[in-house]
Image 1 (cartoon, rainbow, N blue to C red):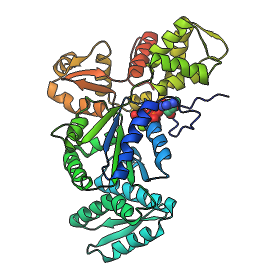
Image 2 (image 1 turned 180 degrees about the horizontal axis):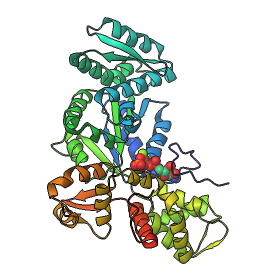
Image 3 (image 1 turned 135 degrees about the horizontal axis):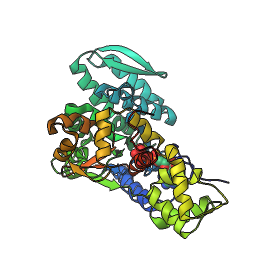
Length: 396
Ligand SMILES: Nc1ncnc2c1ncn2[C@@H]1O[C@H](COP(=O)(O)OP(=O)(O)OP(=O)(O)O)[C@@H](O)[C@H]1O
Ligand SMILES: [Mg+2]
């Protein structure tokens, strides 16, 4: 039986889930301190497709018996999907998650108290929206909004205090954290507000996760010494699988894959050990046939449009200027003024496009030098150029 998950699966069975014992043990041990009244704040970071989401979902499954848990994916927040993430959208999402968690635990008295809260608190509610059967209060004024958002953030602590014998605490998982970049100049205020509320909670742990690396500026805003969470936040970086892990993984889960030594070396180079690419490429490769280095190379070229499909989607929505910047960076990393020179534009005019493609995680900058952060996108562009003599600026 084939036990490889698809690259797009967000929830893996324990059969499909491989490795990561150390990460899981570390994170669980840290989270268990919540039961002693000293909850941690964790930030799980790592490359796109490295396995952060499936990891935290597995940890949530393992802890949800003992704790009240809430997993939210910020990129699935309504506002974000419509093009603009808003603070209100985020709190709505938090709120519905906690209500659902209470329903799952059959904490019905809490639910009654919550609905009473909205009647007795001295702020007015414009309307009660309906989010899949869950009432979501919409505040009327800026002031109501502040009170309501504080209330929503305090819910997991309040619920714990109502049920100290049923649960050991509450754990909030906030995935796709990089979506917060959408808040632009309101990001700082949001982070400081979050911090000010959650630092007083004795029984709620927070786990943030996102496709960011430790070099990202959002990490600085939140986790650095002067950031909103000041040294209080623990960064845990999830790494790609090592060569040895990929080797054992394929042998165990997909024995019909006949890679010889050089074929395997090539396979690892193509996927860089990133589980998303490992699974996708392995599933697309020919089974029960000898796979040499040359064969793997050939298959990589053939299957790249499928392996890179999410990146090609992003690419096709870029403007010509944004695409141009990326193709200029294929050969080597460059500074902003060097890119400007090649494009014959002013460095200032690059701010917007650079920001946008950085937000999309297609490029990253380190000390002012820009680089393509998705090696699969780079590989696809190179092969397109090789085969067609031009980059696929608009032909997709
Ligand atoms: N431990 C693992 N064992 C087996 N397969 C894995 C593992 N981790 C990740 N994968 C594979 O990689 C895919 C992508 O994982 P996941 O969605 O968790 O990545 P991510 O780091 O959250 O990516 P993104 O930054 O895009 O959100 C999964 O659907 C699965 O196919
Ligand atoms: Mg994810």
